Amino acid sequence: MSNEEKKQINVRDWITLSTVMMGAVLTILALIWQLPPTSGGIGSATFLLMLSFILFVNSVSANSKANYETNLKETVEERVNRFVTFAEFSFGLGFTFVISGFTILGYKYLLDSIDRNLVTLMLPVTFLLTAWILIFIYNVINYSGKALKAIRSLKRNLWIFLELICLVFILFDFFEVFIIP
Image (tube, rainbow, N blue to C red):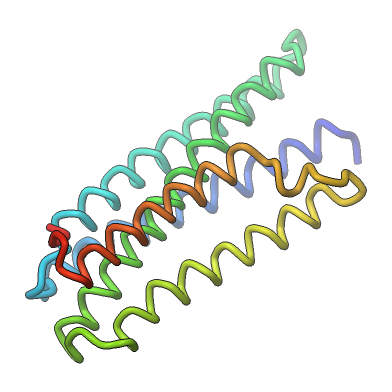
């Protein structure tokens, strides 16, 4: 199988994954609005999930354009790679917003159910730590043999930083410094 065929298959896989994520985001939005948490968080979660929807749509579009460009005979590989990179950043940021939205929702639903206690705070911390460990493992596998590249991945570090900001907001909410809307 040639490199072009491998790229084409990978792009198609990302198109499928992004499309599934769009469906999942819309389903979750419909479900959370049926019974929103009384302690708030519905506005923030909806905002993050709607942004992620746009980013997943963009990922499908950019990957489709890369797939189209790959099939053209005169296309330069660099042009295809730009679309693939754009799609990758869109998907990753969209996924970060989904994780942040889920973290807020899980925390707020637990806050409604069991009030402010350690278990309520453990959910967002455990959820995000698990995501970060998986990102780190992915980076180690992806950058195998490239010493510090796994730790220096700018895009993944940016996504972790955004999720860390979400956790800080949750801590502020938990200690009632300010409430997440």
